[in-house]
Length: 413
Image (cartoon, rainbow, N blue to C red):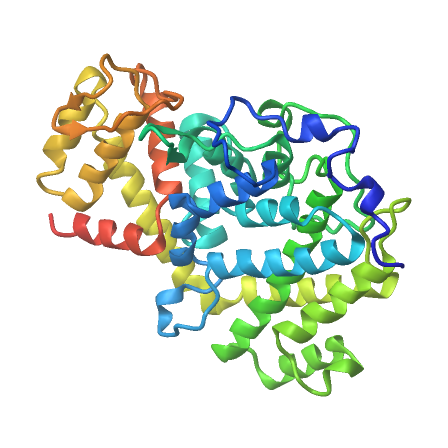
């Protein structure tokens, strides 16, 4: 494969779909001296968001407060995906600014406690809302409706990202063992047409690269963390050495596992066939993924963490849900804040930004909100169902540490 082979189909100006790819739901405020592209603006909007900052305290696989400062968190995984996708994309001639923006935002929708937290929120969502929770869809919901940034005029507004970046976020599912990923042709309604994770391929080659990079990045680093925590025995380590191949020279680490797959993708991808691994490369990836599920993700070592994560999130859900009282909900939140200030008072301040009430600046039972020109996604809290969605949105945005400290606050009474 020659370098730059994908340049003619990349998401650069001149691409016949470029206007659709850069389309936004609303219009961003402009600066006369801005030198960034549309995708570069998306990258920095994600970078400056609170949701991105919170990733540094969200679990990837292993709970980070377990005694090591060197265990991968969600924000480090995002950096790995950006690195892997950027290396592949640069070699193939794709739009690196779009790749970086998708990679930066692809996991914003993750719940606290990693996939275990996601499973718990999904069970709660199924029970009380009638539909599941999955981080790819929640990522789209977050960047479209929940996350806010202050503009030049000190008004808080939704992120309003481009179609291509929003599409890359909801379609990045790395759990499907696809090879030869090709972009879809239709510009579907991302919010309504996706019914499950991995249902559609990304609409850009850049999104396809991030999708395969996500898989490459997490498999390698999760193994290194498992080795660091000494949860793999000698027989399992020997199996890993055999899977790594001759190039490892007995070493097993993130770089070795990632490098061989990155080169394999660069050598075997083609605009006619897709973003692909070789047959042997795909076999290797599937073997490593199978190993990880058997010996890491489903390991008994993680069971106490699994049970604890479920306990914490369920108790937080019940405590927050209990304060709904129609028109008096904000008063109830404020009253509960006397006993649980860490959990309830920030929740009230946050919720006030998303409800429809008169006045540009208001006080709601002691909760102030700044000037917010965002979507009022919870209306006037007309129903308990709407409030339940707000509770799930809020819990999904928590860091592990905040969830735990809020749960510990509940134990005082």
